[in-house]
Figure (spheres, rainbow, N blue to C red):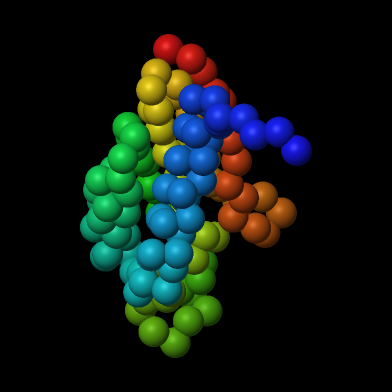
Length: 119
């Protein structure tokens, strides 16, 4: 098997995957309520933007899904899971921009690569 050096696009995609893994697993289980949703969005964005090559992170709590979950709950909060989030992460690695998103698809928080573009 021959060895090759990853391209900038491949490295940028890898970096985006690292960011999503960190975002999801660092915050899963965090107590979430309508009152804390905005601060959790900000905390997630700012934490992930600290990582190398991360240009921008946008986190939106799906408030309709949160309110529906709380109607069935015994408490005024629930645990953060992917079903409550829509996320976009933009990575720039040596002039290669990668846009990734996470959104619910068929009941699963699917993380996907939206675009790869050389600048």
